[in-house]
Amino acid sequence: MMGPGSAVHHGCQPSSTSREGSPMTEKAAKSFNNLGYHAHIYYDPTRTRAVAEGVCAALGEQCQVEIEAFRDTPRGPHPRANVLVIFTPDQFAQVVPYLMVHRAGLDVL
Image (cartoon, rainbow, N blue to C red; front, side, top):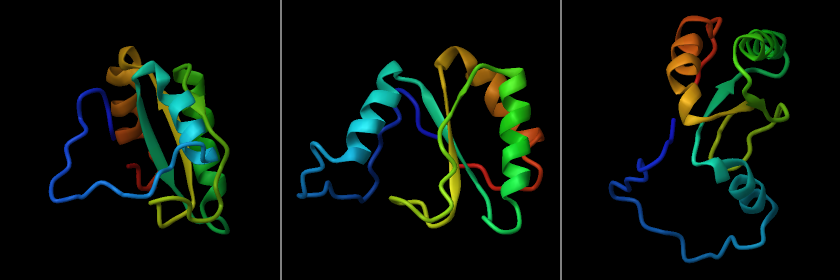
């Protein structure tokens, strides 16, 4: 999970390709404008999507998080289907432990 002040680049070189104006960059900038956190819940579109939907629904009942659209194909740096959960710094202490315990066997990044 990424959060405020956690942009540490160990051995990574910045890309020389500009992403300015790309839909992915624009949406990310808008979503993360609150300087909050996010988590990706990985799932298999044919076997565990319903499980991921259940995890998100239960999390949504516990916390007012933003659940982005389910992405059934790899996108960006994520090699697997995933759903993005966005939450504020004030929600961190509730959301992260909840996902640790109630992830239903899914991987959470």
